[in-house]
Image (cartoon, rainbow, N blue to C red; front, side, top):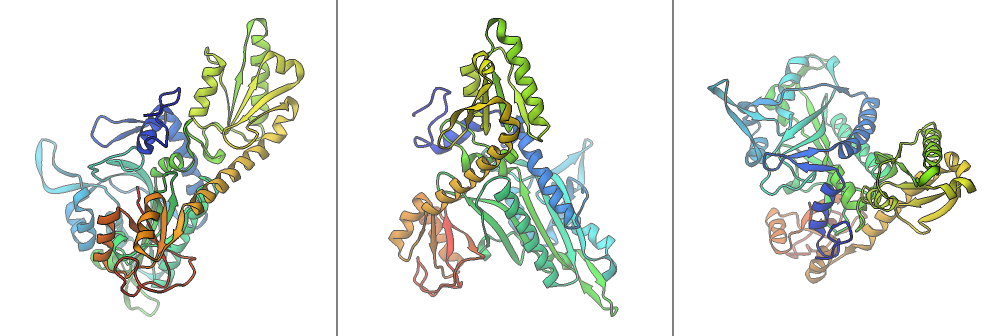
Amino acid sequence: MARDERGVTAQSADFSTWYNELVIKAGLVDRGPAKGTMVIRPYGYRIWELLQAELDRRIKETGHENAYFPLLIPQSYLEREADHVEGFAPELAVVTHAGGKELEEPLVVRPTSETIIGEMMAKWISSHRDLPMLLNQWANVVRWEMRPRMFLRTTEFLWQEGHTAHTDEPEARAEMALALDIYRTVAREFAAMPVVPGQKTPGERFAGAVETLTIESMMRDGKALQAGTSHYLGTNFAQAFGIRYAAADGRDTLCHTTSWGMTTRMIGAIVLTHGDDRGLVLPPRLAPHQVVIVPIMRGDSAAAVLAAAEELAQDLRAKGIRVHVDGRDQTPGWKFNEWEMRGVPLRIELGPRDLAAGTAVLVRRLGDDRKQTVDLATLPTTVPAMLDEFQAYLLTRATSFRDEHTQEVDDWTSFEAAVATGWALALHCGNPTCEDEIKARTAATPRCIPLTATPDSGPCVHCSSPSAYDKRLIFSRAY
């Protein structure tokens, strides 16, 4: 396989191997001792912290409150909602013994928290005055994975899960849409991912949901990745757990509930959306280091160059920029390669000749005119705009890639060609058996019914039955 000087397989040679090597070599993650688990290293966890902070801020601004619920859930709780337990049964990790004894009732390690939170909502809600109840939890969950891949599918991962209860369906559906819009905005504005919001088909819905909304994004191998979901649960969980309230007229009424979540798979999504053969490409708003300064220190000038680098770093930090000075005892070339691999948006090289001339060399991670000589004194005022430009560039680049690899198709031959390299926009009959046959033949699934798609109708691209939806669906192979 083709490799560059850092030993990373080229995307064109084997995209999957490129990803698996890169997340390790760039210091994002390492493999955990138990099968399918991961250790998120500080560099990777910092990306999650930055994303988490922005999500948490937006969630709280819309009136939600953070809480925490138990990791261990009585197995009987999951069995109360039949579709829910059936959907999660293959992924469950179950504790049967503790304290040296067999438990009277097995405990499920949290795969998601609708059941335990539903149980508590039933205790806390009695009147319409208690509604809406808007809760959010930051937690880990466990879903047993047979074919794990770091960040994308691991046995244990981190996420936030929102859970809300409402008086009626319109209010709950508005909540579902609100959560999805938070995800769409954060993905676009912070991860520079041009996600498509849409509705899942019945076969792709969350287990126990009446409706599932999703944001789907295209990775640089043409596959889709589900980046966040929001679910209207109707009264399914309210019925199962007795989440009821006394209406204003005294009637005993079932609540309508929602749930929604975004996970650490977003870190993998960022790698897959923006990375290249040189390594990571990080959006400035989620980069642990937005700027790295590499002082080129030689002989008697070393102290002066390092001092100038530290002074520049302080000036940049005063502008709110996350900056790192790499003063390690390594060659400049080694450091340049290191920070290219780790995806730093801007690199500033400062040597004795630069210092004497009052200049520095600025290198962008991507784009035209990557390397230029700049006035050292102006950097604190010009770098913020450069970071904003780079953030916008990444979104534009990813949008163009998605659009270039998306095809509207009406026949099976065109469909097969489209999903081999990207997305197919196609009409579908809505029959789950037809969905299964498409997946068996192409590995493609209906990712979503785009919310903003133009109305369309006609025969199903696979079986020629009348389309069941008034829009074309996105079909793609997916992570």
